[in-house]
Image 1 (spheres, helix red, strand yellow):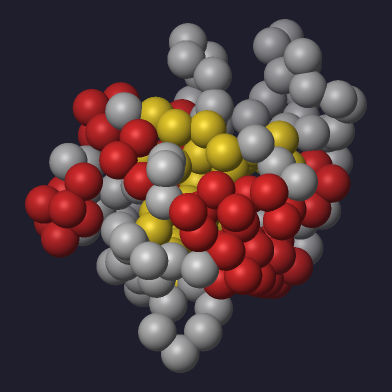
Image 2 (image 1 turned 30 degrees about the vertical axis):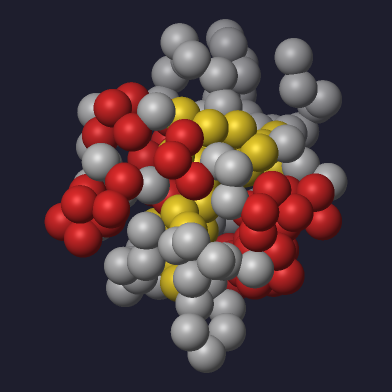
Length: 161
C-alpha cells in the first residue's frame, strides 16, 4: 500500500540513449507545469523494452522513485488519446507514456485518470516523453495532489517513443 497521498504515476517513453538528467528534469517540469506535487508520485512506469535503458534507470534513481515496466502488449490494450505508429514500430505499442501512466505499476488495478497527456522532454533534442495519471486507492478518493484538471491537454505534440 503506497503512503497516504501518493496516487500519481508518471509514464515515461524514451528513445535509446536518453540521459538521466533529461528524465529527471522532464518529470519535474511536467509536474511543476501541471501544479502536481512531486511527493505524490508513486512510481515511474515504462515499456519492458526500455526498462533497462541506463538513462531511465538512473533518472528514476535521481528522483528517488522505482522504475516499473509493463509489457508492450499490456500497454497496447490501453486506450490513449495520442497514438503514434512510429512508436508502435519501435516498441510494439502505439503509446508508452500515456498508456504506462494509466496502466500503473501493478497488474490487476483499474486504469488511472490521465491528468497530463504525453509531453516532450526538456532539452534541444528531447529523447523522452512524460505523461501523468492519478490512480484512486481501492474504495477511496484520490488525495488532493493538485488542480482537478491537472493540464490533461498539455503537450500532446510528442512523438519520441
